Length: 492
Image (tube, rainbow, N blue to C red; front, side, top):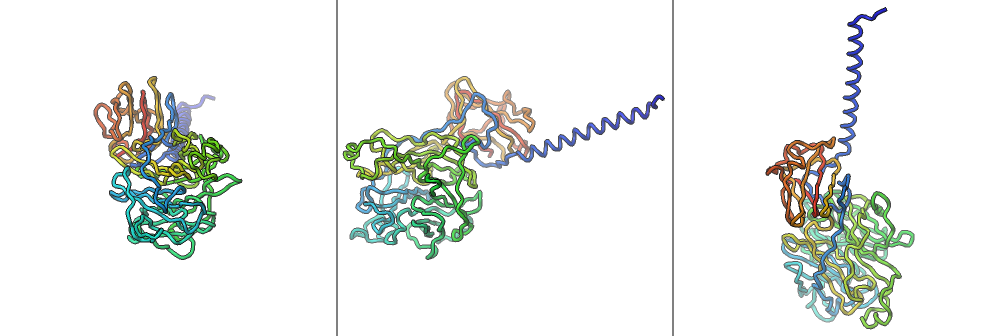
């Protein structure tokens, strides 16, 4: 029996409608999945210090950049300072730079002979030690001591400027200090005159005998304290968090990852974690890597240098770790961040320990400091310089390479780059839709070559820089590099 033609047409129409519905449903699911995977960067500056935004590298690679040695900026030569000065913190408050550090002329952790010193600078390069007249030390008030005579709280006094909104003015500066499982909190209106926030310790979950660094995190909306712990005999890092600086949660060891897998275990003596001042959603940790028992200099060489007998049978340097919050740290780069300088005095235990925080010291420059020549008569603080955002980059050589980002969405009108090329090099950028298709007007063919060496330059397509029509949409960025580095980008 032959089926009527109209019935056949109805069946075909039903099949087509079902197929269309299935396609639409699949597209909806695909779109929902894509939306779940979109990283909202807003107008944040993003640095290529990790693989957070990178989907594919083709002919390009990630490169760690080493700070440049600028030489000593401060000798620890006062009678109350001495060869065991350490745990330095560098802060920038308006136009003033301040360096806080432990004065310790002889051994004995947590003793009354330890003091907390401060130096000041107007440029981060030339430092002076003010005569504060707060404590009488060695028979004189003419010294730069800001805290003393309260052992063990000058062993590792760590100040920071509290950036939390509406923080009381008389508590704008805060600090932590302590040993023997008792970490105390301190507050100050000016960074010079200090008082304990309460008589009892604020934390009791660790020995706290190393640097204990704390700060207010805008991205996590809490105070965070990072400190050293021992896990199966290895020096490692843990953290605790607080909403009010007085009441803290439990100890939480960090997990370090390298290329998606647990990073090789190394001794991390001090971590020096802080929110990077130009991209505070990224925590940078120029940590001290400790190599116990790895001896470089001989007994005779140590005696000639005047090194204390207990401090030349190990070596240390600095590595770079990063975090975007929580207890996960990224070790994209396992190699040393600061390589020890020429000279045997740089190859002894606990030298090259990084100071806490990196500060801007010029229009295109930031400075990083480290305690060097530890346990030697030549103990000093050295400065290292870097370009702004210049921890690491995506890089391609003369033959060129490409970097494709993950799906992201942004706010802003212009895409600006921190980049450097050779005279023959260039950077071009394509913006793709969520399916990986070049968006008309923003293709590689449309992209003007970006050439030069600048901290901030807007990308253009046929002379136009406005990308506001794409704001809020899921997109990918395709960077095409030729003999070039891109350190950071931002939608502004």
